[in-house]
Image (cartoon, rainbow, N blue to C red; front, side):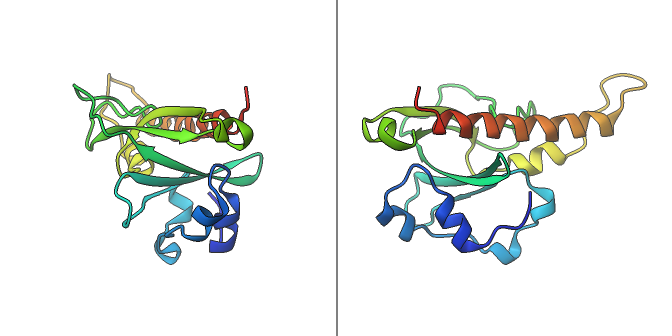
Length: 162
C-alpha cells in the first residue's frame, strides 16, 4: 500500500457524516509499515466497538467505518479477509453502513474480520509445508494477493448502491 497522509485518509471515508469524519481518531501514521500492509485498519480507542479500514480501490483510498456487533460468534470463526486457518486472534462480525442514500436508509454490509485487523501480519507469516515440494513463498504471495482482493471486494460492496 502506498503512503497516505492524514488529510487524505479523513477525506476518503465514504460512510460517515461530516461530524464523524472530523472526530476520527487516526493511528500514528509514522509508525505504519506501509510496504507491509494491503489495507490500513485500526480500532477507535474512545469507541471500543468501532473500527476503521482504508483500502485502495481504483487507485484511490476508500475509508470505511465498521461497527462490531454486540453478539459474539458461538464458535471460532474464520476471517473472511485473510482466511487464516490457524486463528491466532479473535474474529468478530463487523457491519458497515453502505455509502450514500442506501446507508442513510439503513442498508448495511457485514463481514467476519480479525478483531484488531491483524490480517496484514497473518497473511505474511510463512505457511506450514503442506507436502514435499510445496512452494511456501508462492503460497504466502497467494495469500497476500487474496487479502487485497477480499478487502477490495468488501469496499466495493459498501460503495455499491444495489
